[in-house]
Length: 488
Image (cartoon, rainbow, N blue to C red):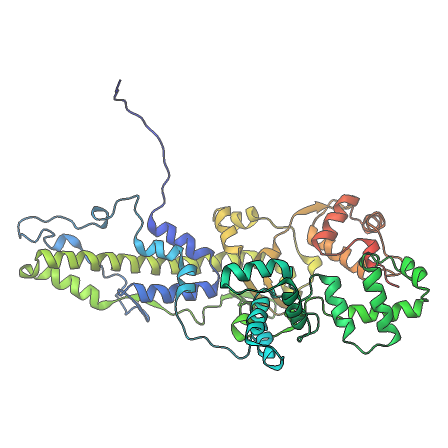
């Protein structure tokens, strides 16, 4: 049975302009530059260049003309009439997938050298292979990963090449091709695991006593060597301390990832380049934050589109149905351009305000770069200083970097929890980690400090930290346990 009833509910919705502002706020500088280039290509109402004087206040009023084109009604042509509240403009949907579109865009590749796989393929010309064997070798190289390892068995590749390329071969022939690949440069390529990789490299070295002993260790005692059980290895192979040191020196000189040693091309190397979003200047103790916007162009709304709208409003004879559709298109593009410009301006103001608050909070640290001067700081501390919500502070600090006189750091680096020392003062956990790192760096590597002894040392320095907390901080610093830090 159908019934009618009234229901009241509260719902929070973001406008398309707010969604765009949030997305632009959280992207780093490099992505912002790409996002602006994309918007300039897609929106003809958006142009590069500074806004002319007085242009910012000039707006187009819809009530000055007849939206229906019949000369009798003065209907306001509002964007909401043509776009429901729950719809997002198609250009905003494309903005959400900007990275996907960038990947699909055809461009002329720029390279300063060969990739790792191209280097391997280039060496096949020096091998005495038939056309059939060369086809198999190219398939095997395609299965070598970026580290230089071949983690698939010849038997599995035999089945796959039959189904994928229709090339018939045998397990024995595929194993011979794999051996050819394992003989290419750099040494160690085509290995199945780390142990195999080290053995391939040792086989190519001059067979001195140290190299032969190192091969014995890797071949027969690799697990003990990985766990630094040197005493057991020395007893089994009758090695003295000097001989064991030479063996360790031979092994650690090898490359565990032969593929990573290949430089690659310019685009591959540039992917790991960090471009700071902020630049900090220290003028005799006066700290000032600047945005790194050197490649971000100024934006404005196209004056041509504004003039076309004004001409439409002032010329009654020109207000036809076709012109009305054209004006609706122009108005949508102009509104989109204004939304985008406002979002970029809001991003700049929010980033500067937030970063300046962080610098002021950590003023002592930014003067000298001493990690022990870092104060405990959480998102709420900066939120209280700026008036922004914690989610806004989180977006500002995410994926952003600042350039200082003592290095480039992620903004999130300056946020840390706090604990109370013996004096009742709140100290940053980063300060404790710095002391822990220094203590381990100065330890006797023949008798490294375990977590219990590290906790005792921290307590003596006035930091009452439990052993489990020491283990957590040590893992966060990427420091192995005491047994793995032991040296011969």
